[in-house]
Image 1 (cartoon, one colour):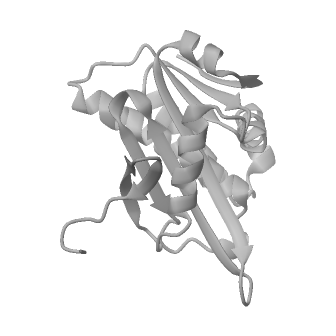
Image 2: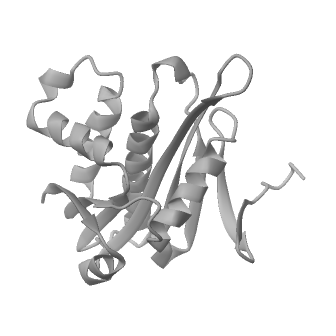
Length: 195
């Protein structure tokens, strides 16, 4: 089985034709406020499963060594982890193909460079995430496609993933939240005991 990277923009029509398990992922990173406070998070949306998940930065993650690509890559990794979880939950039923959609051309290019020559990027701050992406893709035992979609172009799945990533950037270190739509608004669900 293969890990394939498609850097040409996929439209809604192409996404529908691809079939397989479709997963949308996005990352969010910004510097703002007094003292340039940094925020980062990522989101994953799996339409066929009704999964809307937002994630804050990882524990002990040094935001000074991060970039937008860091959180884009973490979104890709979480997408694969969720695909594996769905496979295990389904009694080992494998997906024929998994399609992970992202609007980050740069993260796909970096991952492609890593796959071609991992030693070239051995000192990159995101090397362990790229290593894990390749490992988890192999665990799915099916073709895994990372596909580029045009950002902020009304590709529904990408728009949802973008909102989830922005919610993730507001979460504390290590937090994650399932989210749901209330009308047109995507809101995080509050875990029991935190109301």
